[in-house]
Length: 507
Image (tube, rainbow, N blue to C red; front, top):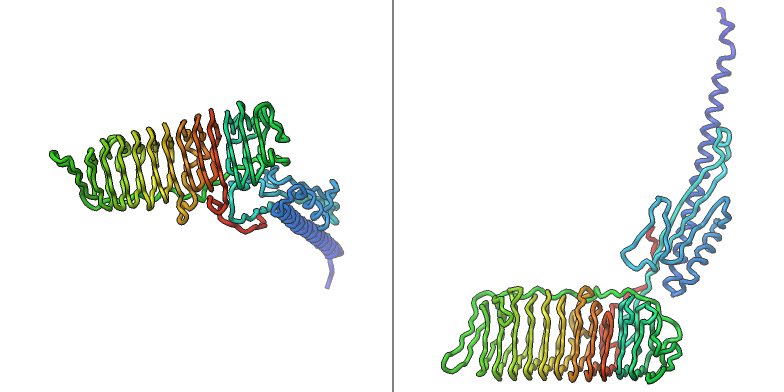
């Protein structure tokens, strides 16, 4: 048998190429494994660093959040040497583009979040044989530290609160006497004259200081030593400036759906006696003359578009059971005047753009539940020496205003239970109208007044005895001899629900 000499050694060549290919594959596997292992280590380090930083946020130690994150990364093998690895940690709420090239954003407070980015360089073992000297990794982690909240008063128990972030000033006092027992005053504006006033203001706080995010007007000094005729007693201005906040009132539910009427109602006035007889149900309007009327318990769906769809005048006396008025036409409202005396066991009013107005020394007394739900631009106006006594009362005004004019008297006690517990008056932050108390009016309110989007304005000689209350407006303005007496108690005002502190890895 003969052998071809030209085929000698071919097997050796194939074996040699096979060995090279095998070594290349082995080298690739080794380098890939090292890169992957480095990536996993970096991710674990980034996660641990972010969680350590978030824990500082929960413990109100944000100043150490960044240093502790860097220290944790170093403990896990990533020392930020700038050669083999770089570690980027933003202060809480400060973010840069991550490994995907996008800068993260959050719907809740960004100050609760911390970002850690680790970039690494891995020298190859076998890759250099084919010109690949190094591989690179980029990992990032985001953790959230949510500070738990114990149920209690909002705004650190301040009795008077102005929430505007920019108003100059947000609290403006002119010839005013303010007495706050059990709390202080909080001004959220960062303006250089956020807290200002003149003409002999007298301010006393017992239980809290005056916290101003921004600066003070020329009549005040940070030490609380008043200039000129201004007088401040108590702790004075807080020695530590408060942090500006973005409030959240999502805990206050929207008004309930108005009830409906199952059949027709009636409102008939006897032309000879003047006596008005009404019955619940759907009807065009209700008009009550000087002889008055008794309004039986039930739901009254009033369809008229008139601003006087419910009308009472001429010294009438109105007595009612458990009555609900639903103004089904957006413009329908009520006009009550002329020394009318009204007493209801309970009274609930649903309106959209039609206002409820009382004037001319009227009296409204409701010992049971009183609710005023205005879901449009409806106002609630009381004027002309009128008196209102509402023992379980709550006002919700989506876009309208409230006003007490001309020596009116209001005695309002907020509900103590239910979805609106301890809230006397509420308007969402989108409501920028001015809540006005004019000269001679005397207002006594138990429960929180929440008007975060608009001004609360006290004109001359107004007296606001808001006992056990918290007055919260976008801005607070007083003029000409106004008086505010506040006895704040956290248990008798709205407070956000308690929540547990949490530390979680978001990414």
